[in-house]
Image 1: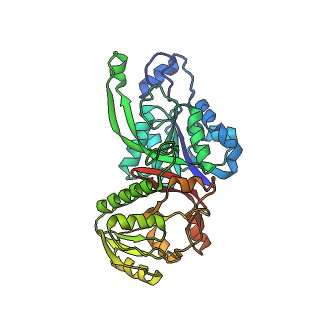
Image 2: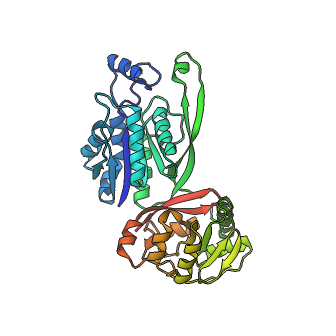
Image 3: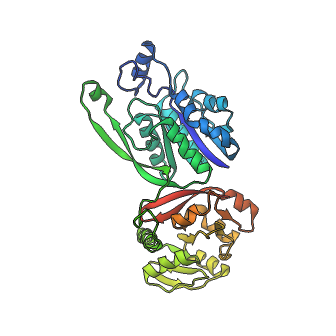
Length: 378
């Protein structure tokens, strides 16, 4: 069961059809309404989410009251829960969007979906960065006049296809995409003045983009080298962090890249690029946790079955995982191995059903250098 956040800017795009070249600001919205403009953001959101009706038992939504989400989900009979949000009377504002984004990120949604234009994207970006929640993946449904940001699908249906693919366990990449916006006042005077505001992490239908041989076949040797380089960069960015390296051939590539001996069927501890301990057990891990408050685990996906916990790495017990935290689990895999799962979710078997349930949802998997996909976890 995946959880999506949904925020609709009901007034997105309202100025376009009446020639106002944008919809930002209360005055422009009021002028558009006085010219007889129609609100179309809800209709475009419904078009995007229509494809989820067939898989509605595999997802749920956190959303806002009324036209900011509730009305569309109710019309589609999709499962939803309202967040605690008191909207601005009479007409919703950017402040409502920002507060909704903050609350949904705090609730831990798997993907934050929003319908609007570049102004809405700016609001979502500002809310997430202001509250240090920029790791949340977002996906825009295009509904505004200005769509210059790369966080939107090419159409409402395309945005829906990404969500459907994610639910069905297909390969979905996570990419940094740009948030841009035009100066509307300058645009109305025929001056195009765009500004870059930052980047947000956006799911895109997955594909093999790196380390391929001729014909599009993934080269395992090249991919493992790319994955190892990405992990090494992460280690360099996090000095004095304890890294627990799990078993398997994929993690072996990481240790070889570091020039360290590796226990193929065990767990090793690395600190600042040096081998701290080899072939450690659960008790050893817990002792190291007492010494090193900053820690991460590098684990690989088991081919064929898709287990990430509970098969050959029982050192990562429920107690260890609780202290580690899901946010500090770094998964690595080739895309070929993930595709061979044929849409089946990754599996956790920690021995603690409550922890397994708490960690279910989605998780990101490093599949190359600056190449990450998101996978379902069960």
